[in-house]
Length: 383
Image (cartoon, rainbow, N blue to C red):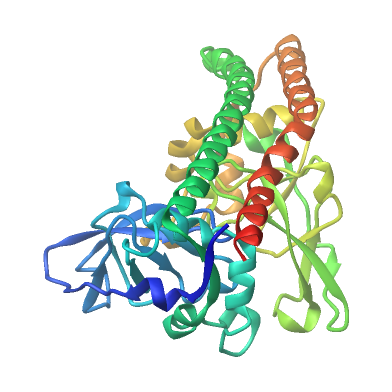
């Protein structure tokens, strides 16, 4: 393979398109996923709500990154659907010289983890999460550039592999979604009888804070994703790094939510893998009376997007991003309680769903490993 040692500055240039923010306008906005996973649409920037006086328009095919999150791979090639969006000065953009490099090839270069690791070595700032990679450092990055025909061949292979991975993941997601919806629909169908709706306080009992914080001890925290995506293992913090005097230790089968984000579906039942973690006092924790309703049924109901209007109606506060659901308000919400036979049917469906996902675990792992392996092959071969 014919290749040439070059810097990114040889094949692309910083290309900023500043626009003054004008009163009365809104500006389509994007964010960048970490770990080379591309861009995503965000809420439009309203001139009346931003402190920025200048925003920067981006174009399809440009390379863009987040200065603040470059250390964890927040680089991307701008896709067609985000052409014309606007970003702040924290998102430098570059235009590729198409006479020397295929923009899609450079985009794939930035999806390769070795590229971010090399650039991270040149980051500046105090602390890992405050380090920034400046455009000059990006442009100095050296790599091996094949001829255009070879670049396009590699792009075609990588694009085809990415499409195959996406199709396979979509099929798995569809099976998962169909089974989950079947379980959810049993609950809502039971709810067609008004008499089965009961206050959450009839089957939830709030647990007290039970972990006294000591400065020299480290605590493994749980977090809760928004939009019904469940509970996850978060970070480990030393007791001297936060101000809460007490925490709650969560157990598998407990129900919890963050007061601040519950209105957007950040709630759920604690999974086995999060048993024994802790949460702050901002996360009310409840035991579920399984004699009335199975924890998995509660989890299935409250992580359903159809519960969002109910959750939002229970939130208090004037600022939408600061609204909270206090425990008393949550306990006053109502949930339909299916019959014992219906709950057994729901549990059977959920067990089948878990079995399907478990059977596909190896396939999913292989799919997730495919693109990194191909990127290693493509760019190691190019060097």
